[in-house]
Length: 208
Image (cartoon, rainbow, N blue to C red; front, side, top):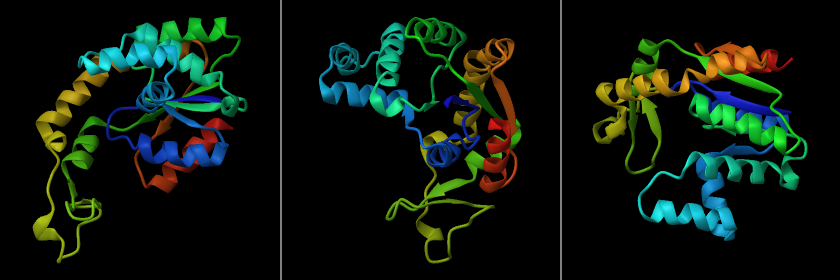
């Protein structure tokens, strides 16, 4: 099964992607992982991408799409894949669709995890991390034990201001891909409110 997983920051995509990967028995593909692998393997596309990254520039869409199609064509994706974090814009979604058609493949389903903005802000701004162990806690849902609490810290991108900026970017740039996939009959919307297990069951039901 060839799946795209989308949703706002803080919706739990990382947790669910790990679960879906195991449940479906397919590789989990993220643009960051694909870029790093291509660079490490020294492919032609990897060398091109490395040049942009070394200069601190964004890798152009067309290069990322070619890299995604190249990765999807590898043997371990023969039974499908889970694409996470890409496409991020309507233009990327349209270009990826054309590129996949040219490669003789297509997306089977697009899973959208929906969570209200205010709940996402509550989730993210409550996250803290133990700098010694790397363990992540939540001040309300999973508070750190008393012996750890004095040393936990909040990451810079977990403030309310940073969170709202990321949500604004999601709504302006990524949300427009939702009607694109809905019009193609590929979109399945899943309620992301609840425990990870509850959301996993809804995802499984959406996959049929």
